Length: 76
Image (tube, rainbow, N blue to C red; front, side, top):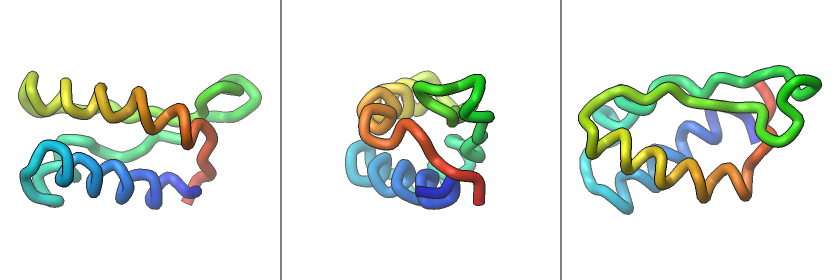
């Protein structure tokens, strides 16, 4: 899975679980940042969400689940 694929997956699940629009969640979620697997062997990606407290909480809950399934992604 690539970083952009992961971003689309996250946005789709946020819409399904919390409502809202893809534009809103794309802005709040931000880009998926891919790190070097040599230094981040367990999970090589992260996001730096912004938005309201409720939006950030929804993202953090989702990330816990998604990281278990997609811990390693490739850059675009």
